[in-house]
Image 1 (cartoon, rainbow, N blue to C red):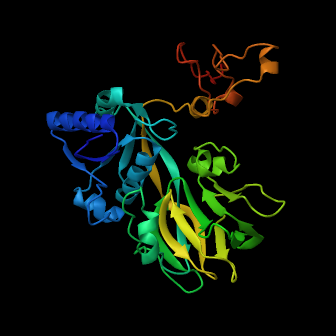
Image 2 (tube, rainbow, N blue to C red):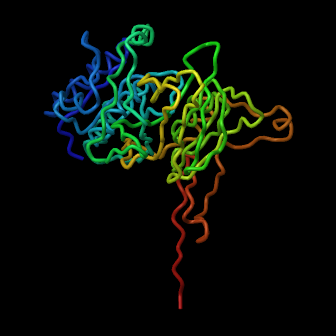
Image 3 (cartoon, rainbow, N blue to C red):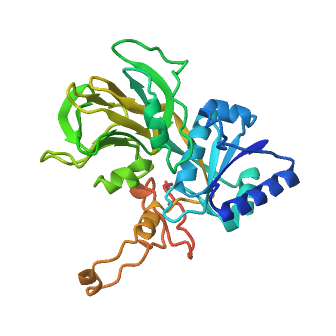
Length: 364
């Protein structure tokens, strides 16, 4: 693809990220590609995504240098600009980043020379009964040790607001939307609706709606399922609910999840991809649903999600199973798949040749 301008999102607290940024800038200078730092935290705070990308002259590729948190910052901007995002891994437990820092030059060359693929990831967006904002008395507490807060989400200009259907907010989530209690000694009470039907009223520390991408983040820590990032689904997970039913519910992409704060509940904070974006009072509500746009992630090779899951979660084999035999890392095959299996996605051992496509022609 033609890369005219790169937006750099850099983890400011890591020296290796700064070193990698210098490498990217040098590559840009060599190839006549514009480069601008993006999502830089100034004294005046942070800008919303559209203002941020416009200030960087609308980059067509966002490169993130850090871990998954830095990637989420870049994803927020890439989604707003309809740009590609390439994650360079400098983190410790990353599911989102694509290449190690040592390969950043070859990765940029691959993108420039069209030796890459694009993976589309589902995003979430939301409507709310009112505009989201963080009360002044909470702002200093909320940003302690975390840098400035993002500005309140704006209203989407391409969607209609109404009393019953709420205000469409110009915000997306790659991982999750979380409604959580504000008071340590009081849980939040929320009516949870799926496709307009009450599932249950929960009293919990938090309630979250995740994408398949976000299923390995907060939802996983709360006991939610691991979902392939190639899936389109919403994953609703309660966090420490005071009720017997504490399971996650996985919905179809056209089945929205509504969260209504009950009338005598405490206030609830709204976080989007880990960033505090507002506070809801009793009677307020959110509707979370699949966003019309998708995130375009640069991939240089087939993503081995389940191998990464095994590595990042440090999965070990059961001792009793190991006593009974050894499982190879791949379900290795050396012959082409039969015609009825040809549509399946199977990873093969990278050290050996991939099986050729099956010949489905017939002789007459």
